Image (cartoon, rainbow, N blue to C red; front, top):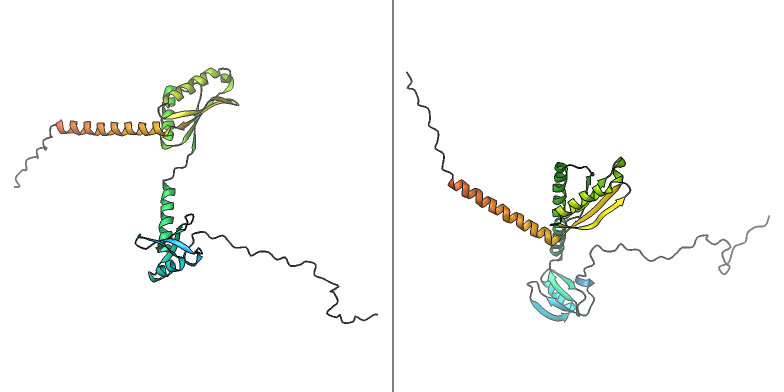
Length: 242
């Protein structure tokens, strides 16, 4: 049996590794906030605003950073697209907190548009129609879109004109606050119409509602002032204790 001889350094390795190591770039998680502050500002000059909001002018970046350190604050780039970039001396932690707070409040005030559906039938009576119309108007005033569906049952599909009549009536009743996005389209055994709120009309409608509310309050106050005050009920005589 042949014996193995020692391999010299110049000889290649007869058993190379099956998997070579692949050099990959170091993957870094992108920063949550890409605002450049302090030593991350690498331009030679900046237009500086001091901690009191005063315009200092164009200064060297090192000088601006020195001022920020002396004030125990941060040098924050507020407008990177300007030439030179505009930087301000401020408390960056406080600035970031207030910015997040404003974004959170704006998100709360933001209205998400929903699609609300109202279902009717060709033989829907007036009371049911008015009840559903009230809900549809509330949705439109709130800023939501409304889909009105007329459902045909059985042989009602042969009289589509009844469904068209009820949708025309619906469109006429919401014309003061909305506009039709889709009108009287057949989908299977259903006929649908879509309505979206008209912002200008909704604003005018709300103004009229507010005027009417104030007028009613003034009328109620006037009637209450004309009403004579009621006399206090006479108390029952107290019998002497024997």
